[in-house]
Image 1 (cartoon, rainbow, N blue to C red):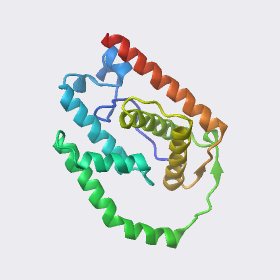
Image 2: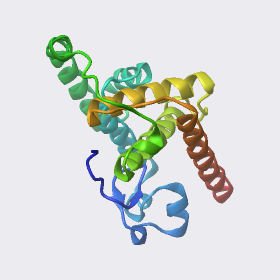
Image 3: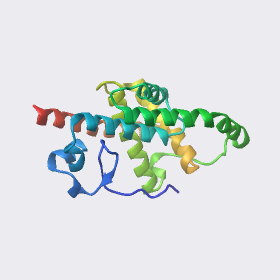
Length: 201
């Protein structure tokens, strides 16, 4: 069974899950809490980068865009705090790579069940939805505003399936149900982006 997550509205700048009253009307739509809204744009950018690095640090396995982002941020002079964090994650990852390979050889395929999205409990479903939304936002950030195409979508879902299998024991099946869930979440993210652009005009 998946670990129960704290419920609340997600701020994409600081990465915290906060109650609705921590967001203004516009901030709620933009996924930015009141505290982060008051920060300078440069500080918002750095906190968002730190939040992205933190999410990548907890992912296993990591995708190529994840590694590329860590390498890029580790050399970023504009955001020293984010650069230091990325350097630390890269250093830890490299030191653990040998021991991880040994564990993979020892444990191999655990052989747990393969489940579709609807067969997981409600907390695991919440985890899956959050992972998809986080990865979509990350992809847009990495790609300078570009939305994930079909190939990118399949890669994102493939990585998520691996993460769920590692964290919860049971494997998540990459099927039509999961593809439809991705499309519905992407549609919501696009709607949020469009609303944000309209408010900024």
